[in-house]
Amino acid sequence: MELNNLTISKLRQKLADGELTSVELTRACLERIAATNGKVNSFITVCEKAALAAAEAADRRIAAGDAAPLTGIPLAVKDIFNTLDVRTTCGSKILDNYVSPYDATVIAKLREQGAVIVGKLNMDEFAMGSSNENSAAGPVLNPWDLQRVPGGSSGGSAAAVAARQVSATLGTDTGGSIRQPAAHCGVVGLKPTYGRVSRFGVIAYASSLDQVGPLAGNVEDCALLLGAVAGYDPADSTSVDTPVPDYLTTLKEGVKGKKIGLPKEYFIEGLDPDVKKSVAAAIATYQQLGAEIIEVSLPHTDYAVACYYLIATAEASSNLARYDGVRFGVRKDAGEGLVGMYRQTRAAGFGDEVKRRIMLGTYALSSGYYDAYYLKAQKVRTLIREDFFAAFEQVDLLLTPVAPTPAFKIGEKVNDPLQMYLSDIFTIPVNLAGTCGISLPCGMSHEGLPIGLQLLGKPFAEAEILQAAWAFENATDWGGKFPEL
Image (tube, rainbow, N blue to C red):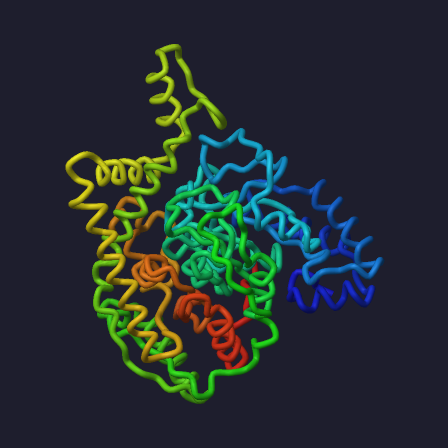
């Protein structure tokens, strides 16, 4: 039995029936990580001892009849979540020696469910990137083609699922950082509505945009993991106190009679032919499933990338000011006084992309430029949000590509930041609007690379986009495909 190929639902059944123990399952995951991580570099830290101890506790819980939906299931999390007594680096040299003194709320929820956390996953430094080439731990490689990027910033989270190291992972999405790597690695990734999942204990990049979400091998596992971590948290001032539905009970309701909108601004010239073909086939599938396809407009889409890179970098400039070598993290001090210590610590601790975004954000917030840049970007953000609300008055959900191209080659865009930023052109608007979106596999390129389909829903309509994703996944054979490493 190849345990690493099984879904969470199948693993849960085997654990409940006594065919398998959590310790056996955890050992299988740890062995798979040891065998494959040298190829894909998806893990920064592997927590073998703690994972096996948690697996033993899970087995006792199962034997006592006290199992929760994730009890005994090995999972891994992006290295952006504070995790008690575990090194939490955020992919940065400046946090290389930081060991968290507490658990983020989502980590605490996973532990309460009895999940087994096997390690922390590689990522673009401070979640700033679209390719996972900006990590102090080195780039993550795409399991489908080790010469290609996995997408970013949650590249390790997507690659770990695609490489069958674990069944599911947690990532964060600030401008597409769950959905784009999910598309490039051929897995399912969901960005929930802003406020649906607690951000407490998540190392901040852009606080008004960051959101925690699941990545998994199929839609059902994604729904299960979302249900485990979603919900109101008084420790997070941006958390929304609204009920969390049981995503599994409505998962199979289908899309018959649903109105699906195609934003004309997302089907542009320059879209890769393979992407265009795969998304067109997906549209035809939804028509066959009984959905009505309607063209809609999101007229301010052209301004989304510029708007995002003003707001996100401004917030990053503020959030990253705390990394000064004084309170935590790495400190560089050649005895040149306080200002010299700041300069040395930040120069040595931050990578080039992080420095670039700090400088962009600091400039946008500086005296004389705030109104011209940051304030104007916030006004444009409101227009983009209103575009989505107007579209959702006509349709139930939106369908778009996830990325303009399949995964590109390592190093291909690293010296051209603008081209790299444009990789997220179809995902960024969703974060600006604060609504939800999911990426799922819908095809393969002529080079054998996965292509992703994006479904976007109204605020707190995660159940609806999961239904639509499940319907497509079960009407086609694109889901559940994994590469041979």
